[in-house]
Image (cartoon, rainbow, N blue to C red; front, top):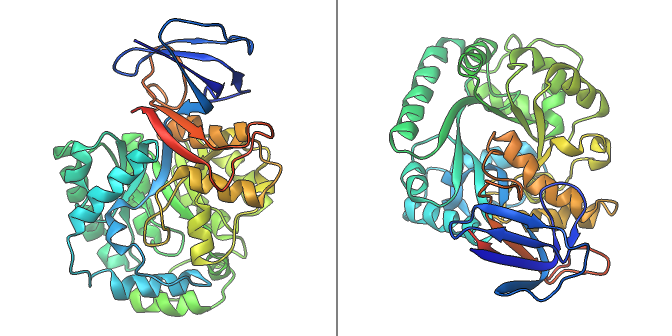
Length: 396
């Protein structure tokens, strides 16, 4: 048994506990959480740290299989520039892909990540995941614009899903990629699978302004690029609405659904999400957004969505680290009104709820085994992260 204290404890939600005490079993299971009201007395075998203790982080969006692409892609100004580079360079790596995946998994562990929602287009990451301390939710991603390929796309996704299950690499679901990359018949197939299995959906949403433009009939740079893969004027209806509102009807409404990126999401989209998707979550990956489009989501629009916001790192193709604390720094630096409590809730409990892992992780509650992180080198007076702020695992 360990008794651990720090300058502050963040429990998963609510205010920080000053000089609180966390009691955990040898395997990390929470036994008790003591609010000392800030008055810490001498206790036998008590560990005390300067900084903030919080539950292990949940990385709600990653592409672990792309870890070999670290540093391979140049920063771009829009999604088309990024996707073009991906197609050119994704198959040309001559090193050990599995070694890079293993390194990335270890990097996440060292950065205090205990659970991860990971996008999978291949089977490459499953062996590493089966041996990892991180709990993974594997989103088998499907994309395809040609209607005559729907059955093949679904069959391939099911094969990858079965490989994930057979390798014990975590929970599995089949999910659509994005508004611009999935045909209507393919949407319906994926929707049916999700509804039948009550599985979670992870959906790349409004990462670029070009996505919205497609649904008002603009034959923009993205449209012209996608013509190479079967897009034509009949693929999507011209709705004169945002991409979010245009495709909402093709997504399962009662499942947990993670909308990822949301860089160009507007207030009407948020209202629609609350009306149509009672179990929706917004996943922000700010460092990736700056890499691809040099633009961040308007976090102010989401001020009433505090319990629905999660944090992701995206992949090492568009990021130089797999670190939740680094993502939080970017958000704090660009949105000064965000409190440390908000940021840490997004990074812990909300992500656990989104991935339906909150029965085990995300908060310091009796019986849970959430991992324990120490955030240090922070401004304890202002309760702000600094450029020097780091995280270390006190209990995995």
